[in-house]
Length: 381
Ligand code: GLA
Image (tube, rainbow, N blue to C red):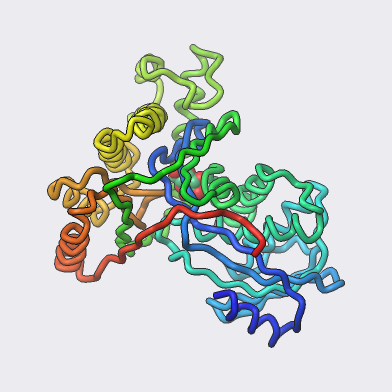
């Protein structure tokens, strides 16, 4: 990918570019907990975005997307976002750095990526992180701290892309480390690396290739439900800043005050926060059976209580259970995308073959299979 990007850069803008990269992510457990101040447990993966960039001495940014075969130019003083969705991520990152009194000067860039879009692997966070990291390196002597770089990506989603996301994806693609998952406390920002080498198991993603149009508005609606539930609980327990601070019992106290829908959403989140801790404990004992069981519980919650699964993902999950796969669940924001599966080595081939065959028979299109390696996040090459 690097050679292709540099060749295009040379053709469009000449020599002298620096190359930066960042990664998509998986999340072993801890879904929809980030914006609730809970724990997440992601890792960066070997699918990412790579960009060649060079300052151009003007106040204009020229970005070429190899994958869309399209160039966009915008001025750094402009307030109006570009029409192209992909360019909004780059535009948003520039604006967010400037808002924080960081420095951004004009630059030329060519980028490409191999994170499948819409699969729930955070291709957008990979793009934001690549440019945030590069701008920090090229114009700010790396003075913006890494957490702020992640927040710059998150604010880009909020302010230019209409998704009120949490911090997980951008955190993972900035902080990712080869061979390690990261448990992040989204309320305090504390995090810990956990080496992840599940001996005897493989992690495989099965992509339903389903994408739901209204995913971002449905996502924002989930977030509102959680905020309403937290506000109701806070009346009795002022210490509850985020929903993740609430005890299950405290949710029961407000059952009559909130809608049934908000109740179910909150019930899922409170359970999920605890599951992340349980999975980390289990990993320290190499107890993959417990890890897997928690993944199934998460799927149940995401499907029935949080309602972000879909028929195709429920089908994949049910099949995994039937075939004695250790753990399986819908991953990421939901409304389509992938299941993440923890599979014993000896079961891997038959599980993947059966899943592809039965899914294709039922839905008329083949799912995609991704073998992921936990990899480094944002970096200069
Ligand atoms: C999307 C968001 C994240 C997180 C997940 C669900 O990936 O960008 O912030 O909320 O969904 O866990």
